[in-house]
Image 1 (cartoon, one colour):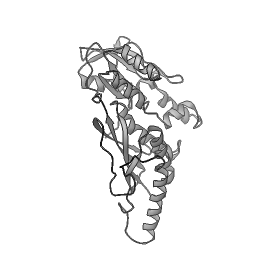
Image 2 (tube, one colour):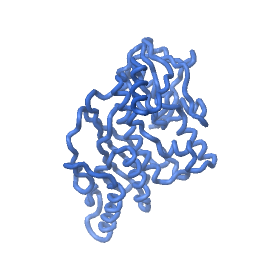
Image 3 (cartoon, helix red, strand yellow):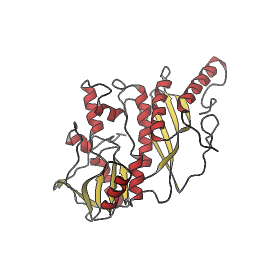
Image 4 (tube, helix red, strand yellow):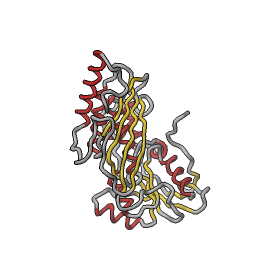
Amino acid sequence: MSPSADFPSAGESTRGEDDIIKRIAAILGRGPIPRGERHIGDDAAVLTPFVGQALVSTDVAVLGVHLDGSLFPLEDLGFKAVAAAVSDLAAMGGRPKGAVIAVSSPPGTDLEELHRGIGDAAVITGCPIVGGDLTSSRDVSVAVTVFGECPGKDAVLRSGARPGEKILVTGPLGRSAAGLRRRRAGASLTDELVVAHRRPWPRLAEGIAARGAGASAMMDLSDGLGLDLHRLADASHVGFVLDHVPVAEGATEEEAIGGGEDYELLIVTPNVERLRMIFADRGLRQPIQIGWTVENVTERTLGGEPFQRRGWQHQF
C-alpha cells in the first residue's frame, strides 16, 4: 500500500491521503512480520518462498450486494471480503501466506472502520495483509487477492471425486441466510445467527485435515449446497445421491440448500473412517455425511427426488 499509488502528487490532499494510509497500515499491521519479508510500505510486498504448491485466489465484496449497509456496519464488509477469499484456500486444503487488498469507495467513506474489519479477519485467519491500494469510485468495494501454500501434498480440487465415494459437510447449513433473515426482522448484531452472516469463519483447519486424510474433492459452500454440489459433480463428472441435508438450528431447509455464505466445506472422500479419525485427532467437529457419488452423471437426488440447482448467483 504505497502512499503514491493512485493519488494526486501535491498539496493538502496528498498529506491527507498519506495520513489515511499510515492509519490504515497501523490497523492492519497488528501481527509479527516473518523474518525476510516486507509487507505494507513499499511498492510491492516481499514474501519468503512458498512450501509445496502455491495457491492464489481473488474475491470482491461490494456494499449493497454482499452486505446490506442499512443493517450492518461497514467493518463487516471488510471482514467478509477477507474471510471469503481465505475460505477459497481452505477449500483446497491450503494455509494462508498473505493477502493484498484494493479498496474502492466514494468520498466520505469511513476507511478506518472498513479496514478494522479487514484487520480483524486477517488476525483470526492468520492471513496478514501485505499490501494493497485505494482509489475513488461511486460504490464501496473490497477486492482481496490471497496467497497460500499446500505443503506435503497436492491441493484438493473439485474435479477429483469418483463414483462410490462419500459426501460430507463440515457442519449444519443455513446459518448465514437465517442470520440475514433474523437481522431484517430486528434481531441484534450479537444474535448468534446474525453473527454467522456478518462474520463467517473459514474452515482452514478442517480443509488441511481433509487434505491430509486423502479427500478426493472439496470446495467451500459460498453459494449454497444447491449450486456448489452440482458444480463439484460437474467438474468430477459424477452424479450423487443425498439422503439428507443437515439444517442448522434456527434455519429452514431452503436456507440450508440455497442460502449461501455458510463457508462450510463440502468434502468427498473414499475413506470416511480415516477422515473422521484425523478430525477427531485434531479436535475438530466431526463432519456430517450427507450422501455418496454415483457413476450416472444425470442422477442427482435428495431423498429420491431430483435435487434442483438453486442458490446465490450474480446476474450479469
